[in-house]
Amino acid sequence: MRLLLFLIPALLCTTSVVGEVRSSVDAHLTASNDDASHAVSHASAASAANKALFERLVGTWDVSYEIFDKDGKTRTYRGEVTYKWILDGQALQEVWTSDSLNKVPQPYSTTIGFQDGKRDRWTEVWIYPAQGMTLNVSGVAEAERIVLTGRDDAGANQRWEIDDIQADSFVYHFEISTDEGKTWRALGVNHMRRHRA
View 1 (cartoon, rainbow, N blue to C red):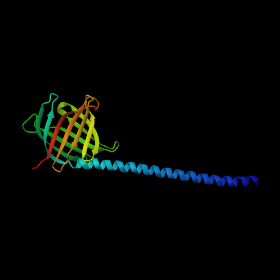
View 2 (view 1 turned 180 degrees about the horizontal axis):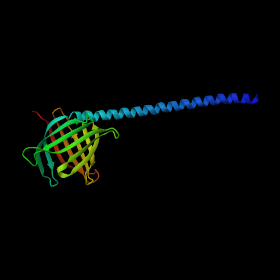
View 3 (view 1 turned 90 degrees about the vertical axis):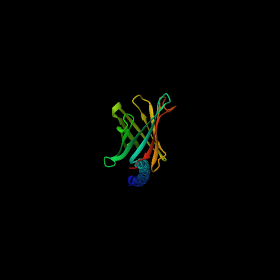
View 4 (view 1 turned 45 degrees about the vertical axis):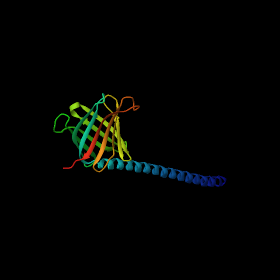
């Protein structure tokens, strides 16, 4: 009987402790779920912002190229670029043409871009077959501009920036850094104007 009298309060205390532990675990799980939902919501918002800015580029654009040589000279060319969604809207392809080798602009490179869900960044792969060149860049929309960064085959930092995006124009800047971003040199600027048939 004495043992029974001792066990009843002990069981009541244990039940109370279990209840407190269960409440604490439930509260922690709810907070964790809220944090995870917030992170997913933030990632979805960033993804939507990236895709929305690139959506504005879909179509054909006339390009005025300015290429800056190391000696300070500027070369100018003309061409076109077409942006279109491929793979059921999962990727954006750019096909670039230039009159650098011919009076009539010829295709010379292509870029495939997509929203990388794992890294929550827009990623692009640029391919220039004639020169055997490829370059991977990635980044996010920053207000009304897009900044993409990566490293070229020589290990130099590359920075591509699309800004001043209007309904019928935008500007594309290309820069390089060989000192880990301490200083940047402009490689070129593409002035884009919506093509009118």
